[in-house]
Length: 258
Image (cartoon, rainbow, N blue to C red; front, side, top):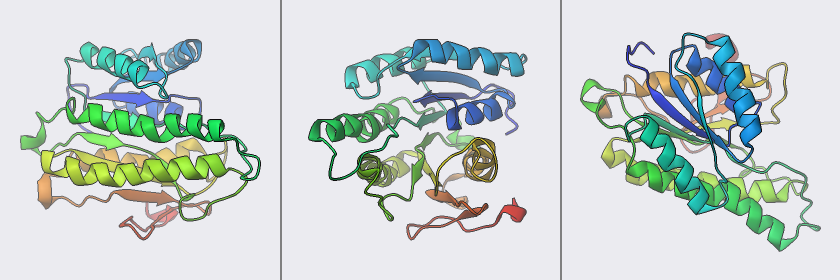
């Protein structure tokens, strides 16, 4: 990523694992980062850490917002866009409720709440981004990106985390539909697929995952150049390391080739 002018990203659902690693990576490349989540104090703490580790990068901006409430999410997104001139280079939707939810014990109201966070929030964010994606760099080959991390729970559901399986499956379906309607506008859609539980150390650590399946989306969006570029909707990180593919057009590779 070689642009001189800081590029902009909004991360919804900013937390201490994947969003933190992604933010640290982008801050090292001089990105203007805006973080949104419900917990304002956690946002301030994360922003302070990123700023301390990357003193030359633009200061991280934060705004509280509840992804499960459309009006709250819209308010936070509108505020974020105003801070960077109204248009955004990348929007990353990373909000989900991760908790045990045995299928025989799952209450309808719990599934509804989780659906609002994971799936409805994806819908609201994608619709909003259609009107706020920065398309001004497309003539130079650089495209805006709607980035929504996913998993393999739609293909390999686990009855012990039934709510997460159902809601992430819905979110990933929405992502594929957004790709169809965003492509004609020059907006790219990316889904880093994490094929296992994220842990602090090892092959499933956030830093390894960000480097393996998030980083390529950011690099490729800057050199896509419309139909001349090579774009894949999904890149899949597997527990044994490396990145692989699903049956929906993902990329296959291995750890040593990165």
